[in-house]
Length: 219
Image 1 (tube, rainbow, N blue to C red):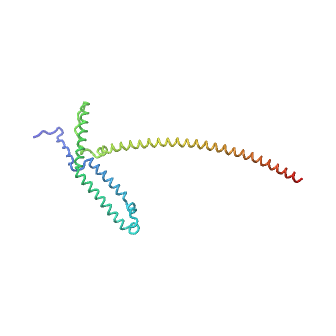
Image 2: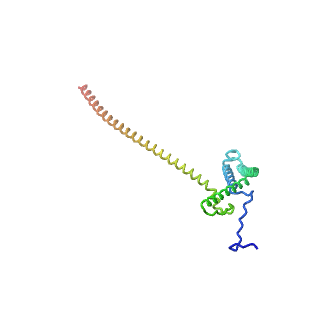
């Protein structure tokens, strides 16, 4: 009889990896991206946009045009999915991506074992990726996207802040120019007021002279 283990139980076997034709993480991500792109495209081809291309049927037979639109969208979606699946099958995409997943995971495990061995620690047994829970798997796939998105948002924020600083400087310059214009305008108004006062004095003097001349003529 074979010897029993120290715990009295035989070690549980590692679950089998998924078969080559079933989508792995990268193949599933590719299919998800295609489905999202297709759905986004079909949503943009809504009835309002579709009817704008056929104004006469939209006005006189809207029910018929709506039925035709729904049938057209359905057939278009099915055709796109069928062509995508045919290309995936023809190019052997899913097995190739699964092989790439396996190679990358094996490389990570080898690197981890090498680092532990170099540091004097015991090498950890390899962990099959299909035995991991969902959270670390989708976190590993989302990390590059989130990092890229964060970097892009930081760059946009810096650009916006720089644009705001330039705009603030422009506004300050415009305020200075406006203050200078108002000051010069006030000076012009004061000059006009002084000129108006001088004209009033001249006008009164001319009137007095005219009255004196009229009195002399009446004598």
